[in-house]
Each structure stands twice: as C-alpha cells, then as structure tokens.
Length: 286
Ligand SMILES: NC(=O)c1ccc[n+]([C@@H]2O[C@H](COP(=O)([O-])OP(=O)(O)OC[C@H]3O[C@@H](n4cnc5c(N)ncnc54)[C@H](OP(=O)(O)O)[C@@H]3O)[C@@H](O)[C@H]2O)c1
Image 1: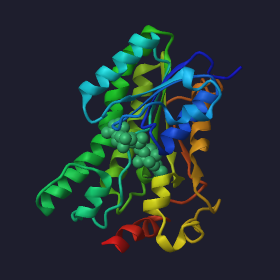
Image 2 (image 1 turned 90 degrees about the horizontal axis):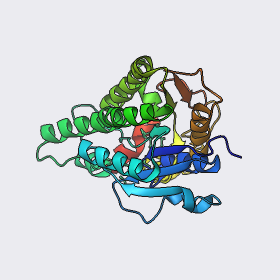
Image 3 (image 1 turned 90 degrees about the vertical axis):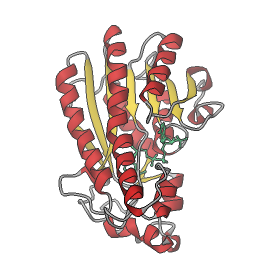
Image 4 (image 1 turned 45 degrees about the vertical axis):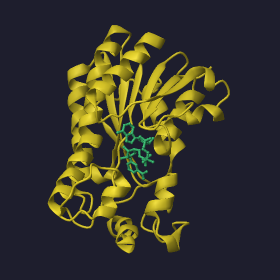
C-alpha cells in the first residue's frame, strides 16, 4: 500500500533533474505519473527504477511555453486516465547572468532562450523567457488543471520554486528570482481562490544535485562541492528524491491542512550565501 495509491499525477519536466526524482517518489507511493518535456522520450525515465512503474506512467512531449500544447497535453491525460489529482509544476530554471543588463551569448545558449541579434534583444528575451518558464507557464498549467480537479474529488498542486525568490533579492538571478517570488505569491493567491477543493503549495529549493547542476554549476576545480557548499549548514546539495518525498508529503493526506505555503528545502542556508559561488562557473567560461 502506498500513500498515493490510485492517484493520477502530472509532473512537468521529468526527462531529467529534479522532476525525475519527483516522478520516482510519486511512483514509489503508488501514483500513476504522466510526465512531460520538450524532448520526446520512449518512457518516463523514473519508471524503470520502480517496480511496476512502467505500467503506471507515461512520458509525453509538451512545451510549457505554448498554452495550446498545455491544453492538448492535459486533454490527453484526461482522455486516458479520466481525472487529475496532482499537478507538480516543476519544469523551469535559468542560469546566472553576471548582471541584469548584460546577457552573454553563452548564457543564452545554455538556457535555450529565444535567440536575439543584439545585446539588448538578447537580454530582454532572456529575461522574458525566465519569467515565462518560471511563473507564467506554471499558472497556465494550474488554470488548465483546476476544472479537471474540481470535476473529480479535488486535488493538490505543488509549485517548485527557489531560494532565489527570497525577499532579500537575488543579484545574478534577477528575472528568475522575481519569477520564483511571484510563484510563491501566486501559490498563496490560488490557495485562497481554489479552496476547499484544491490545495496549492510551493517548495523553494536551495542547490539540488542534478546532472546539469554537477556539469554546469559546480566549478571544474570543485566537483565534489566541498568549497561550493561550505556556507550551507548541511554542507551538501539537496537530493532530488528529498524534493520528491516533500511532494509526497504535501499530496498524500499527511498534510491536508497545509495550504498556500512555501516550504524551504535548502539545508538551512541563508539568502545570498551562494551568489558568488553560483556565478563562478559562468564567468570562468566567458
Ligand atoms: N537544481 C537546482 O539546484 C534547483 C534549485 C532551485 C530551484 N530549482 C527548480 O527546480 C526545477 C527543476 O530544475 P532542474 O534543476 O531539475 O532543471 P533541469 O535539470 O534543467 O531539468 C528541467 C526539466 O524541465 C524540462 N523542461 C525545460 N523546459 C521545458 C518546457 N518549456 N516545457 C516542458 N518541459 C521543459 C526539461 O526537459 P526538456 O529540456 O527536454 O524540455 C527537464 O526535464 C525548476 O523549476 C528549477 O527552477 C532547481
């Protein structure tokens, strides 16, 4: 018996990284998980690691930058499974940029934001993309899923945010931090609008170890992160399964009176302690 037996869950951004860990933990607790990413995959990557996971999962293509693609994706989930109980808005992210008005081509290439021809155009598109992916698209997903949850027996939405959204501010992550701060705020607003049918909560992550984090964020001369994580009280990155277990907690009936809140999963670090460390890899590449 799992705590999510029989639930139907959508998790965005499940081809790798944090979303892969979330999908795995939801599957382990018995949920059926439909994941998505822009790249086509034969199956949900987490399914292979969970007994019976392949029978309870699917991986579809959906670019969350396109609201029509979200509409089509959610429609397919309803056609196949009949309802949606859980939405985890995980897809998102950015890369640090040395200053808000100077987005080097390198940063744009790594993040995959729309191509611009001049410095100004590159910068504005980079920031618009960060806000689209980390704030607008999660809202689009939530709005599309809300009536489906209400048609069933209600539901639980979890938004994946970041410590960059802390009110202390986030130099080097200006648009991303603003978007994640907006996501925290949106979480509370939606919780107020959509209760009692739907609970909406948020997880604000600190550094969380993924393949991309290891390859593109940890400096080449500090790949075990000993220096990078020195200012984090727990002296390490979070693990994707730890984020997944927090999602299970919020969706499983263990947290039925938790609503509209943002829980920090960051090893207890203080705002700003990783700004210089986080930027080093990018500036080294320039
Ligand atoms: N890792 C960290 O240290 C950390 C810290 C704080 C917050 N977070 C948050 O955690 C979440 C996941 O981050 P991550 O580190 O796991 O990132 P990641 O390794 O880059 O993975 C992102 C996932 O989202 C998918 N994705 C990207 N753009 C998409 C789009 N337009 N439509 C649909 N899917 C899309 C990617 O697949 P495709 O590329 O194939 O589309 C991939 O599966 C993000 O919201 C991020 O802000 C992460």
